[in-house]
Image (cartoon, rainbow, N blue to C red; front, side, top):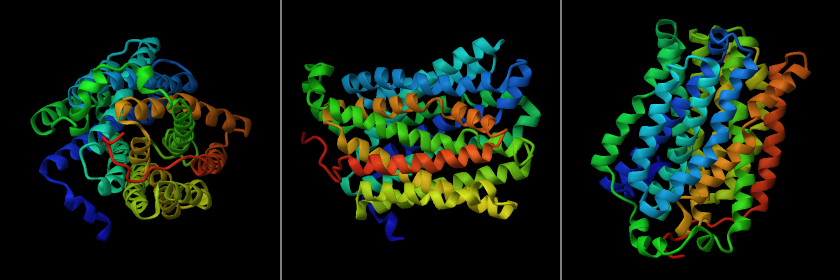
Length: 408
């Protein structure tokens, strides 16, 4: 397909870099989404209300800006590659520790620490990959990288389906320590970003406030944009398995529940690649707006399909649009960010947006309770409203499609 032709421009080293960043995002998401499959099981073990366990998602998302800032500053100062390796080890260790939490309080504290480590991965992987590849490949690679998140969601669903009845929710978090092995691959196959190497001396002499001079308005806009994007994504994903259990009455380990989540994530992977590649031809903003608005007519199939066939079609299509819009985000944020803070600004804006969106699952749960437990209405109305807000924010913002890195 002509859509994938730009990937032929990548040499062996660049392909290793893209693969490492993709795997980092995949395993990062795998560890995060494991909790979304076991919310009910965790609440039963700790004799807690489901809403209390949902704070584990909130705390993870809320901690991520701290990690993005901490690891982003380290990456701008000491390089993308070594800081990425440290970050991957840390989020794997905190995932492992979660399996041994003796109380809900300890469990929630560990999810916060996991969120700090998880917060660094997105920005580090994006900057390392985008600074290492030719400009005309950014759109497709952006979609490829972003598809790592649905791949991680899919792996989480697969592991849950195959193992949860045998090893329980604690066993799933032990399996979640596997991403630490990625460090071996990064160390052996991935070089430092050439853009960072070229400017390392100048960056070492300048502080954050000097580097950000004239860019605070941009940072504020990107944070609002990422808040809308994260409300869009998490609003379509975090309570979907709960929707399966409580509305569709599908057991957590059933084949039917796995099928729907599989279709959800296949749609996400296709959408990220398709719209990411399309953004090279039609521009970043136009592509993101189109994908976001096309999510609205899909909502009835997604929530009210009425049969496994139509629910599957709806699950596939909603994520084609949601993650299709998201597929453009990595390159869009990196193109808008100045060279000196590219390790920090995209990740911090993304994770501050996560912080603003961290109450998404709780808010949807409250809307459902207000409607007498109608989770389908809550999720559908949320996605429709956020799609409109997102399209407006994208339309109002700037674009620097194809800008040269290392030239600013």
